[in-house]
Image 1 (cartoon, helix red, strand yellow):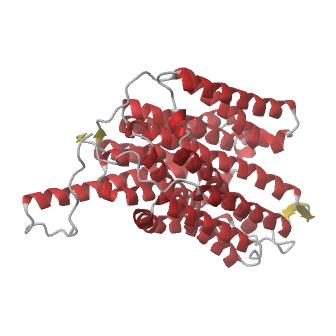
Image 2 (tube, one colour; image 1 turned 90 degrees about the vertical axis):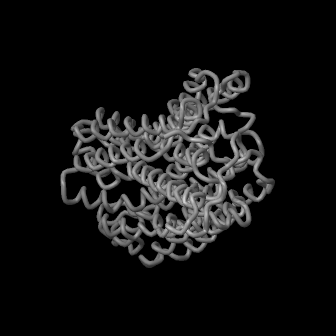
Image 3 (tube, helix red, strand yellow; image 1 turned 120 degrees about the vertical axis):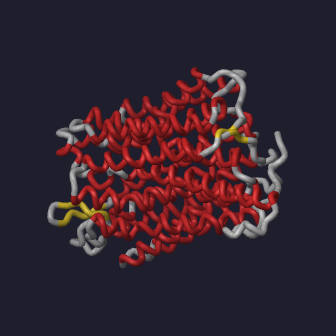
Length: 497
């Protein structure tokens, strides 16, 4: 490993005429770092936008696709499953064959998926397109891993915090845009917009992001990839469809039990193969393991805002519980969550640099827990919901900024992308469990008014109480993450244009 470049200068003004050649090179490096971060953050925003793309038309999908709700629900489920499976696999491929190369491949797949969905008029092609879009979501964790290879260590913390936050920012900011298009134009334009954005991201990454020379030797673990995919499909599909198909149905029990058995067998196989898809010995190290467990709680808490708050804002006002807002207005009420995550990222990076990323993670989880606890009593006004959204965004911003740094401090550079991919799966698992629990609560604790089932105040209070409890568990786990110095040097790797 080469020695990291010398520290950048404090003065980064445009007036470089009085600088020495060495200082000008340093200034160029700072500006180059900022450009790379901007491109990777923009790519993450575009990828995250794919998650909320269909939210405005979910209720209309059965009519638009000439299908039934049980089939059109796969338009959402397929994206979730594809992202969960593809992200760790893409991470390993990035470690082996170049992260930038795999990011470009994922963006191509995302573009193809957007075109397929845009041309779809039936449910099967739409599911195919959405699955391909889900595969593209792996660019976020790969983008974080690229930063470790090409960004100066002094600038790494803030860069990681910003790109990590794009998952929440893109969804929160993109939802009003998607709602505006869906209400005023044909729904196909949603996917043509996604196509155009994917092409822009593809061009920017190809033009701006440098190629890392860091590679992991060995062969790709196809058996491990298949085993991980099958196991994750079983568990995530079982969890996400349990309330719909019945938790005691043979199908759900078979998926959950089968997925668990496959993952256990996969784990034994990975420990014995010389070129494992995921090095479980590294993943079992205390900092990595505890960070991943905490990630489940953060993913759980974050998704509560996506599942419960829109219902609270949009459900009819008949019972005096919800606010009956139009989709666009409700989306604007939730937008502050993403904006707060964006503005929190530099503050989180400074705290991590000063006190360690563990402190940022504990602070973030604590803010989320206190916010949900307050939310049990604050559901009577629209501004209460906005306030909950703001402070959850603040907490998630600190937590998301810390988790990739904790992972990268504990794994070798050759395992960065795969380790970040596994961390992304843990967050997805938390979100899937949250979606299931919130869905069950809001669909069972209801009152019927004018033929419409509307969740009760108690339903939202129970949801927030569970969110607070899960966040507290995450904070307790995070407290036991070691405060040790980084195990592996976080240094920039020489790059070629």
